[in-house]
Image (cartoon, rainbow, N blue to C red; front, side, top):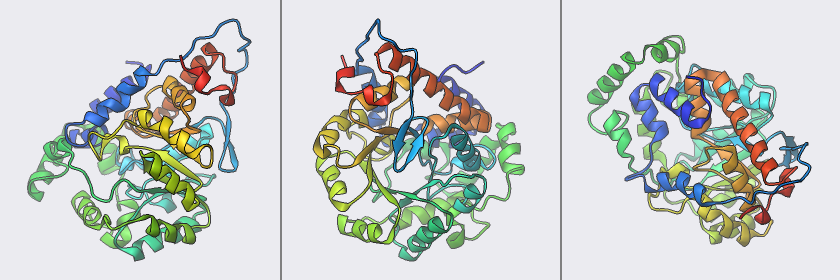
Length: 379
């Protein structure tokens, strides 16, 4: 099959990956209501089709956080994405650099921030959780500075991890360690191409940024156990003020769904916020990001740059997001599907698909450049 869209890449990823990894990427919290609504609600946003306009030139570039990018798209942070292809986060960062879009590395990446930075010429963004171990956090901020990271994405919607039924059923979590390990081993054996690429040729895996506290030989079970025990439920806006004071670069707050919280992010002095429900992986029943976006854009009135994620599957969705108030969007699952299916080429193909779909949607709605897109673009 020649993949034509993101759904095709999803199917290819499902065929190649062991079940526990695919379900981790693909699944959401509890009954997955918000996960489904994230994509379904985009379909309710109609665009105005315009005709007889000169759309011979369509410019998708933008200026964001003191740099010009070719697309209003960021490859967002995804946990253990580097296990979906050998040194996967490095490949994704290289693809992002080639397409001139930002790449944001997760705290819980498979490749360390130093390894990813060594594989690219341009600075990367870095995503950080509030961790109880403040020494680890301070060390991560320092590591980010030393690697030339200029943008910190601080995730605030995970004070406690949600239950994800698919991860329990697939063997990623739940049950005894022996059961989990045996289940994952059997699944990996039925994915021989992945097992050779990642499990054999990709070794050693040091679990990226967490390796200094876990040790080089720790596995996935130790990785998740440490992380789940270290999420900090006591975090407040006051805590975030301390991060703002320590971080000299751009600060983006990720996980905003409420207009009042958006105002707080702006008051804090953050440079941007991300309208996000964690891809439907946290509070099941929360608003879809596309439904939450307009009220947040109205609340901050341009005082802070607005990004959004969760549910974006086409270039048309990107245009819809911009029309409803976003400056740019973050992709999560789409780029990981591409990585799992075809490594760096898959990520490049996914970005090209989004770009081509964006150009068509912009042209047919009479928009020559991103600043032409607005509420008047909606039907």
